[in-house]
Amino acid sequence: LEAAIATLGGDLVPLAELYNHFASPFEMWDLCLEIMEFGNYTEQDADERIAGLWDKYLDPSSFVMVDGTPLTPSTALKEATRRVSDLGPRLYPGRAFPLAHVALRLEMMQGGLWPQQGPCKGASQAAGLVAMALMRATHESADRCLEAYDFLLGTQGGQAMH
Image (cartoon, rainbow, N blue to C red; front, side, top):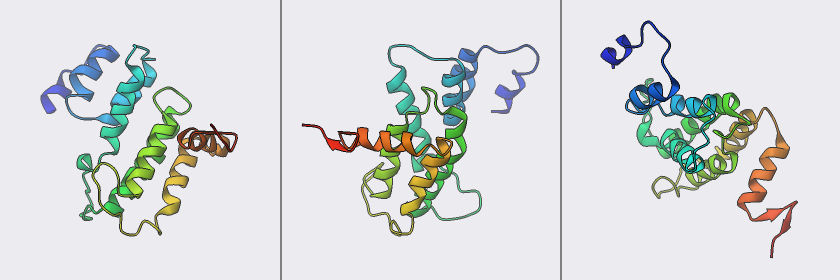
């Protein structure tokens, strides 16, 4: 990593080079998402690639708990919601913040269904974490959050679609 950082001194580096030679190889998933947003990535696979980056960013296997806290399903959910709260506002309302996908992953994590199955102990105490993170990420837009959940539930305006 230090050798890679040393090559950054001097001239401006194109976003594609930052992405391909630094952010992605060093698993800086948040930086990858910011590059996708700032670079206005619009290739045919953009939505799938962005969703995949969010999956990597929220996957507890990528978490490093520097304060020595053991990584449990509950602490993983707390870290994932913290990440959404921190990065989301920088990307929202852009393409690099797929609100419904992020909401689904957090809800699945809370329910112990993603990335691996297993109960999230303390899920009842953490119930508000997901909602608070999504609200922070969307600059307190309850309407956008409700639209995302309507989409996930297959409803429109609160009415079931048949």
